[in-house]
Image 1 (tube, rainbow, N blue to C red):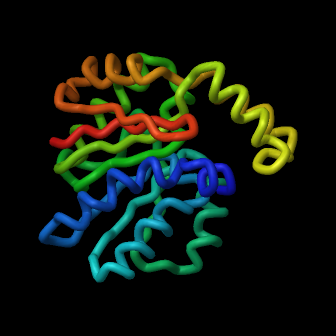
Image 2: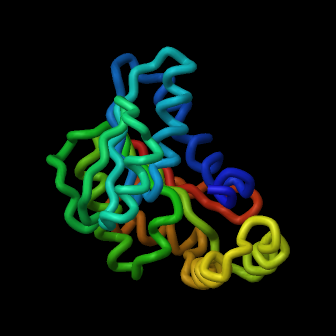
Image 3: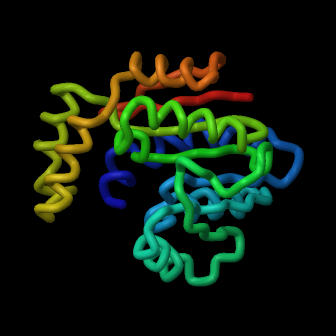
Length: 202
């Protein structure tokens, strides 16, 4: 949460998602892949309440432990529903949500798996797909090492952070995977310090 909050992870996604929600003329339904602690659904629903918008968020995660933590953090928040499921086999019908989004999820998968996730997400989404992730390179690696004493003090966080940067994709690779998934109108935006966001409007 600290890394996403202070190093631009949440902002890289909400910068593209929230204006689209503002333009909708009906209540929006969203799907968060790999929701973890459900921090992002909480941010989105709080923003919607402040702007007098109606939003329902489905938070999907494969791990029961994550969902247990998310449930405790939500404390009965009515606008967020948690689902246990696999990102490769989304338990939703085509066109059943408006937007599918994620942050720090895609780099955990091989390219052919990312293509499948994007293709299935596009099938489920009526309006679009917005996926934010790390970018691979020496600058992100150096930047993480500099920020590590503040944001990644735990040894597991340090190990996972460096491994994630090594496994991350470049913007060009993300564009290629989006094209292979059939998201031909997609764009990849880069964000400081080392984030990128794939935006594919339907």
